Image (cartoon, rainbow, N blue to C red):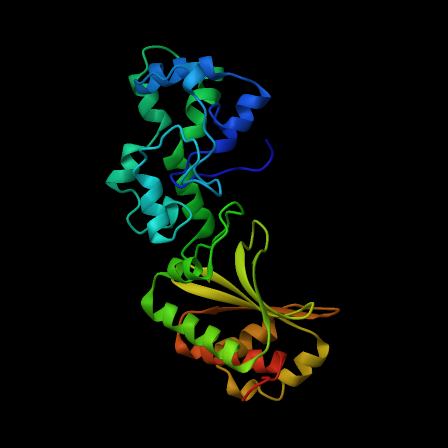
Length: 282
């Protein structure tokens, strides 16, 4: 299957035997039908088991095995990628779809076979998986799911904290009123996630990564730009100055990652932006 496909509730499509690509590869729907009945108490006949995945681009019209899921519309409405990003984790809706191996083992009347676990339980062990996501991403989680491309509005909504959204709006407003730049929504890889990128031709001027309760800006400063920074360093806060000075310098310059959570950091970001490129309009 290749890449991991994590659903809104923490299930994994790429491991699920009901997922269309897995059926096409090797049809094990009889095992799944029996396993669902044995461990979860419901029966779906093998020929009726088929799912296109709830994070598909056309999830509103896709053929889904669980079209009555209460979690998916809630996560989408809140602008999250999955439940691990929600302050209400674990809520009643998620609990309806929660799968915990230890609970299944307690109720099982016999030892769970290896093929039963991998085919009928592991794909749905969402609580363990979502807790791992929380530990991995920490306080400022990002939009890391390549299959869920956000709009600008969803990026903004994802931040959630009103005072930080206001800072986001001020930054975007400044960029679009002062510069003639092309705007793109790009996926920066599994470690960086989705970003709002402003470019001049092929040159990236600024990349903005929405996060829960913050956003982080990437500035790439070449040697000449770093020389220009020395002329304005008295205009930024002590913490940001330390950040720039302590960032490792490579042969072609520095990658400055600045997390914005307050107006001081926003002011620093605007100073760094002007160092990167002078405004086209004043």
